[in-house]
Image 1: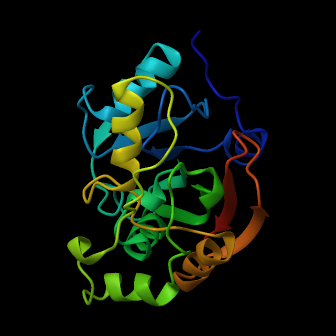
Image 2 (image 1 turned 180 degrees about the vertical axis):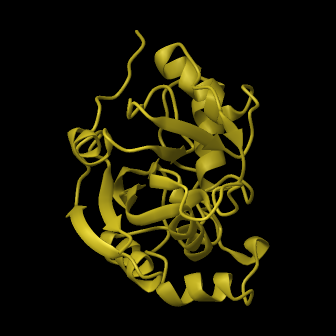
Amino acid sequence: MYNTFKDSELAHRYLDDLVGIEIGGSAHNPFNLPNCINVDYTDSMDTVFKLAEEQLCGSKKAVDVVAYGEDLPFDDESYDYIISSHVIEHIFDPIQAFKEWVRVIKKGGYIFTIAPLKEFVPGEDRPITTFQELLDRHTGKLKPENVKMSENEHWEVQPGDLQRTYIHEILSNHETGHFTVFDIALLIKVCEYVGLTIVKKLDHDDKVGNGMCVIALKK
């Protein structure tokens, strides 16, 4: 049976009347915002993530613009918001990503971020990443290959190769895996470091419930 997760009422409340960008949107976890384009690092429909989308809901979300989340091909202050769910942890330099998102959104615009709670990530055995490590990545003191990825090989998955491959990709792959283990304090600190003002925070998001949610404003 195919399934999609419910919409976020909070996202609709803040963003429905605005024009924005989703970073790494997926068919099984849609926001269904009316004026939103999907930006992803590839438009291939054969990545393990797209195959997982198809397995979960029977479809794959189209990509409108190919770009990395930390290097967007848009003018300064050209959109009202940027939204992402379970994406920021895949970006090696979250500080750079947030700086780029601040550049792209207008004054009075929003950055709406959901990041996974550690306890809901199968096999995640690392501590919460320190803010100093994020600074070291941002300043070039730490390279992607030097970040410790999860080495836990004892996660539980349902039968099937895709599930195991998918979990490997989100945990251990140095190109597509989880570089950062967030808690809500770390996510808020990154937002505030780049000059954003926090307007809403949820320990559990109102969509799937397996992540934290922070809505930040560019003044």
